[in-house]
Image (cartoon, rainbow, N blue to C red):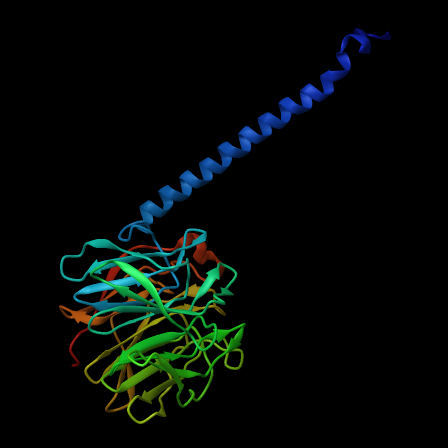
Length: 349
């Protein structure tokens, strides 16, 4: 028996368990408070995203994506969703404006390049995890719009992400990107019918996170990032698909990566993207006249974005831009968007 001023405490009667019980009760209160705080933060975040419109549009908001157009549908597959990597595919009807599901990739991937021929949609490469862990399986996938399924049809020459892809004359062309953190200048050609890969003339400089636009046999590669030139490259090059040769064009007024590009007649449009050095997302729009080789300014994006997908078809005087991150760098994982916006393409004065 231990005596004190306020009474006695008899450890033989189990009173020694009191500190343990008090500790357990305190831990329960702490855990409940923590869970409530997390739920409050999630709820506040959801309300904030809703008020900003970030949850509008796609069923799953996403960034670090590419797109391609087939049969009046804009296809987007994979990407970074809210704190996770996605395997879903969604298609936007460019006339009616509605979204629909288009199956699932064989595995969740982000920074997947996309292209289409007249029958199928293709997706290549990418990363399997948020820390940019390359897909070592290095797959080339094909989507059949009739069955809604994705199938792996070939292996890439090596793992690749943050690259771009286009289709021309029965072949897919993959340009730039990274492999195991190394910037690539590679241009690969995949003959769809023969299932064969060929190394073409490499780019004048290695880069990733660039944007491309094709007009007939001319493929324009713009901006991007590299260890040599930094996070906001200004260089613009054009690849002659039928001649396997490169030509350099005037630099962009403002360097950027994770942006969009589009060809309208004799004009090359560059818009949106990200300046990592400045820590901001861009909305500006610059236009290169391919006859005079002079730059001018165009209508900016209504909502600054990076890592978005761009339609390769002009609809009613504008091009459709979907998804993307509303915040730069690592903030992308909570600021992914599902919205679609139209960038006005005004006739040249």
